[in-house]
Length: 422
Image (cartoon, rainbow, N blue to C red; front, side):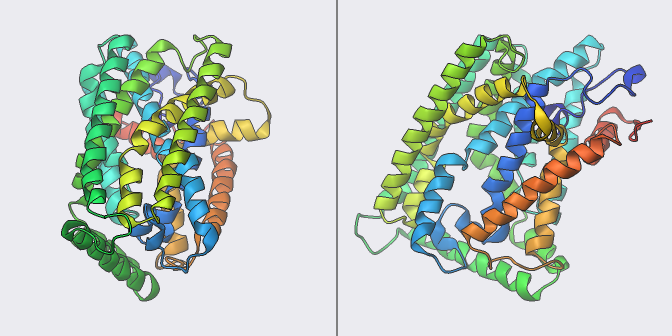
């Protein structure tokens, strides 16, 4: 999305509207966004193709489970879950600073940023109710408005506030879901009443969604989102803000420190990037193996997914940002250029992915919801990533902005911009 997620909304002076799409940009940000938006599809594919219960717990799959499914769960837990969302959130924070820097150079008001984020909230609500209720845009809009209050802080202060807030949130989440897990005694046969009720509600909702996918219509799909999950987007914001806002502040700090523009020594950035990815991944793997040893119970997987994994994935998220930023500064070849194009259209690709997955899994499309196992879902991911790489470069060769980047830009500035290249 624009400077925040796709950077294709880089606010250029009116006289520069016809500049090439790469004008006044950081390709390292675009490249990192391109990787992140494709990784988001891998992170969300279970939520697209299976009941939401399966998002954190393999036992929620509507398809039969095999022995290897637990190991695939572990692989996704270590390599994907939380990392792509975290990377996206860091980039969003960096984009807030980038947009404001451009706005100040043009003498624009800070309220322009508030208007942009309000527009993002509207896009997010439409996405949530019409396409997929796993939306994160509403949380980004709400947390982004709060993050604006910290823009004047120095990089060191931003990093300190972000880290303190992040670890405080991780402790809160760990305590919250750890309390639920503690009620499941090792080898026990019962859940706490609260967790049992939650599990029953999730199963019932999954059954309703399976019925709609197989026998219902798109209008019933939307009706279910409106009636059964009308306020869930607010609950999502309440649940994730303790992670999302601090990560935005950390992203703002990293941008100020020069992580994305080559200001940091390349060798130093690579060394610490690999250290972060390696140590965080090993710690996440240990946590995942512990959950598997616990029997991959609902309470154990929920605790690990939403609690202590926050501690182990932060080094991975920051490490990935460091490594991809370096890679993005030295991009060569077709795949690299296509990845940059996908990043410039991350907003359109994020929403477009939900639209494509709606066609694959829900009415009136192929209705494959609840019918593909994890391996088959990963095949869908490969096709989805291939489509993003193919259409993004094709589109930007003909148009100045991605379609949703253009719509959001027009909404932000209150007037139209040339879309087609001349």
